[in-house]
Image (cartoon, rainbow, N blue to C red; front, side, top):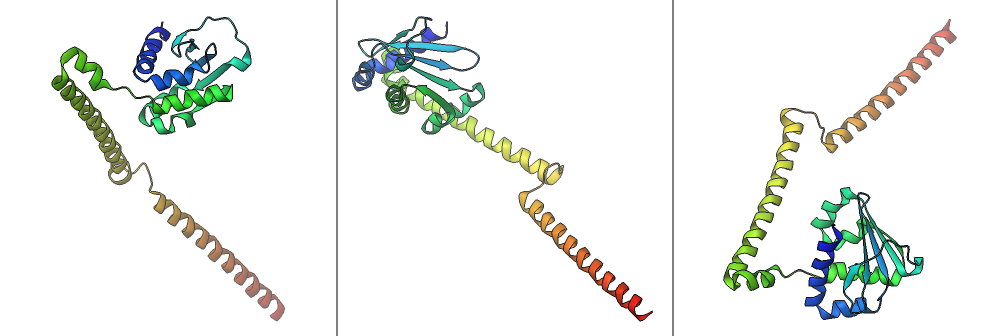
Length: 198
């Protein structure tokens, strides 16, 4: 169900970049399982370097790579492709996993090129520029909202405390504790002096 659109999209990217399909051809017949806890995508590398749906039978462990991704990490992966691999737990054939990792970093979708075939060059450029503008505005709005909420909870309705204030409070508590201990020792010495005079 989900695997078919995924395979079609990746194969579209691979078809546009012959070098990428050539890298995958070296791993023809191997399977990769993308495990996202909620569902799994199993794909197999074909002889031409393109992906195809893998059967649900168990392949030999050496010919298989399992990529485990937590659903909560998906937005982080989408935000920062350069750090995407750090959110993925990889098991299996190291060479195949390395090839998949490199392709995930290097393959890029040229949206303008695909759209230009449908709506023309000028409209494609404008549509992609509008899309990028919308994404940037959404990021900026998200950042502003975070800053405004932080300011509200720090200044107007103090439910949060700045780290500097926590540090200063901790130092003041330590100083007060030391002062109390010194005072207790002085009182003990005074009591001993009083007892010795009597």
